[in-house]
Structure formats: structure tokens, C-alpha cells
Amino acid sequence: MKANSTKRKIFDAVDLLTEDTSSQMPVKTMKGGVTMLDIDSIKPFHNHPFHLYEGDRLDDMVESIRDHGILNPVIVREIDDGYEMLSGHNRQKAAKIAGLKKIPAIIKYDLPDTDAYVYVIETNLMQRSFSDLEISEKAAVLKERYDKVLYQRQRESIMAEVAKLEGKPLKGGHGDHHFNNRDEVGKEYGLSGSSVGRLLKVNDLIIPLRHKLDNGSLMFKVGIQISFLTEEEQQLVYEQMMELHVKLTMEMAIKLRAHSGDLNLAMVRRYLTKTVDPKDRPMNIKVAEKISKKYFKGKDQKTIDDILEKALAAWFAAEGSADV
Image (cartoon, helix red, strand yellow):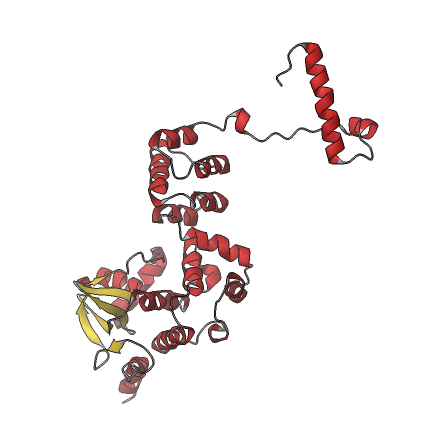
């Protein structure tokens, strides 16, 4: 009896999802709640923004599944040629390694992309804190928060549902925010509005460049510059980075961004293999302190610039080599 009680407790959360919620959300749940699906019939969520487990964490999950099975069902949505995973990518990966052919699933029907993305984001946030996420993962979370793709009540309903399934409380004060702007989004994670804005730009990078951000082979500030290029231009830059074994610098990124819209292969190769021409490099000329005190004390910058220009013009004219 005790064993049955424990098993019953595992599926209490699932039972909550089988209740009639049609008046709250435009989704349906299959009668009975859980269905055993062929594990290969479930495709990963398109453009899934989170990295899957590897190493010890994956090994531990595989061992747990072998010993106890999958205790919490995955969440999928029906698509034309099967199912798409919303919550459970790691469980599916580990289950395949453990040799399982079927997996328990809760199926969502007629679920639009906007709602589906909330499931993907929120179920991942229940497993890890925001600070533990990689750069591209943080960017994906902030995009879901910032985009005005769902009414707030609809988002809250979905978040409450997945919280019940995972048996975990909601993180943060989701219900207190309407996420109308970057500052409001940033408050939840201790970020400024400008920081949110920069992270949102990460979503404009092609996936291979997001991975480079996450593994540290692409500097964040450089990545932001490259995010202003078109997807086709970014792909060209990425392919040449790999072929030439070049690490992008800020100088390269600024030069590439300046020509966004008309970049071609020859231009990209030139900017990735040559340093910026001296004539294009900003100049920063310093004047010795003793000269500054002797000639420029008490004068404003404009006056100093005028004096220097006249003095240098006169000197070069006298030398017969003025280039003015």
C-alpha cells in the first residue's frame, strides 16, 4: 500500500494537467493524461535554445532512468509528421542511451508556436537558475520575457501548469511583471535595460556564432557587432573564420559591420586576414606634460586644437613637405 501511495504521488502533478482548462488556455490535453510514445517519434524543438546535458550530469540521468524509469513525463505537441518536444530533451537523450524504446508523454494539440516556446523556456528555468545559463541561453530567456507574443494571463497559466508538473514553485515574481520594456524585464534578473538590450541582440546571431559566444571563442562585444550583419553575411563570416582559423577582433567586427549589406567573400577574407589600415585607425596623439603646462595652461580644447593646427601647418610648410 505504501508503494502504491508513492507511485500515486509521482503522478499527482500529471493528474492536475488532465483537468479541463479549455476556459483558461487554447490547448487540449489527451484524456488520461499520459501516453507512451515511440521515443524516435519525438523531434527536438525547432531552434531549441538550450544546451543538452553532457558528461557526468548525463551519465547520472542515464543511470537513474535505468534504475527507476522516467518518473516525470515529457511534454510534446502534435505536429504533422509526429511530435515536437517541449519539455524533456535531456530525458529523451538519456532514455535513448539507456535503451528505452518508448517514453511517457503529455501531448498538447493545436498549440501555437508562441505558447510552445513558453513551455520550452519555463521548464528549463525550473531546472537551473538564470545565472547558471550560458550567454545564448540567457538571451533566449530574455527574448521570451520581452516579446509581447502572449497575454500575461496566458503566460501565467502555462507557467503554473509546468510548475505543477515539475513539482516545483514558480521562480521569481512572474505575476507581478508585464514585461513591457527592457527595464522591467531586467529587474527580475538584476540587469539594466541596456544589458537586456545587448543580450537580446544575441538572438540575432546565427546558431554557430551563439555557440562560440558560449564557449568563449567569440568575445561578447564582438558578437554584438556581428549581430548587426544579415544572416547570410554572418554565415559567410563564420565559414571564413573556420577556414582561416581566425579569431574575430573588435577591429575586424567594426569594419565588417560598417559594410553590412554589401559584404562579399573577398571583403570578408580581406578584413579577417589584414589589420586595419593605418589611415583607418583612429589616432590618439599625446602632448608631453611640460609642453602642455608651458603653452596650453588655462586654454580650452578648441583653442589648443587651433594652436596645434596652425603650428604644425607652419612647421610642415617650412619643411616643404606639408600634406594639406
